[in-house]
Image (cartoon, rainbow, N blue to C red; front, side, top):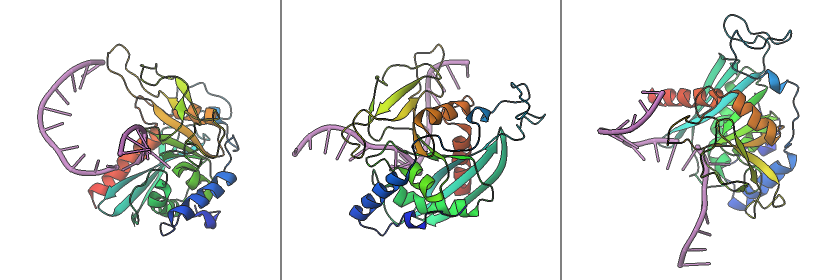
Length: 268
DNA sequence: GCGACAG
DNA sequence: ATCTTGTCGC
């Protein structure tokens, strides 16, 4: 896949003010509601014994032959180089894996992550032959100071539906405390607060999603922080993350991209 | 000065 | 993100 909006390709040599101005343009171009052709209910990891329909029937491999293509992208770092890996799934089946290695031009700055990692991610997408129906990006989407996190930046630039899947909250305020143990499958709305300068306070910009939890143990797992990247609503984003969780905290596309990036890093 | 901060 | 031993639990 190649950028559909080349003017949004992240340029690490821009000044901080220019980066922030670009993010405001990207947020303007972003669509934070469902705008895709596939059936989100057809996204699942169900095997042969799923609730088969005429249009989406799992075969003996556990693959739903015409299930949507869901991709995960994640990065690993080696010195001043970034490894970006993409894994594309149809049901449980891996249909494509690619990676790219690019130098990191700038250090990590909260709020400007896409200018550090975006180049490597777009290079990996340039090597991708499939056209995923939706992409899970590691990091924030709409949960961002200017509603233009990594997932939004990548989604708008490629004009592909994206979801931000983060392990920590960048900004915004949970409607309920996240300190208590939440049951598996639960979600808590994240509202814009004063830190989100482009949205009215109270706007739901994402969800804390409990993709995995221990049953009868005193220990507990922290929820993921899910937000729309581009062309998905916060609700559908949370639904899709839960639909692709397979007993691990991270959804399968993200988990597989994560381990692939690590293995590439290993033989580097 | 203090707090807060995806990866 | 990355650097890392042991340890707890299913």
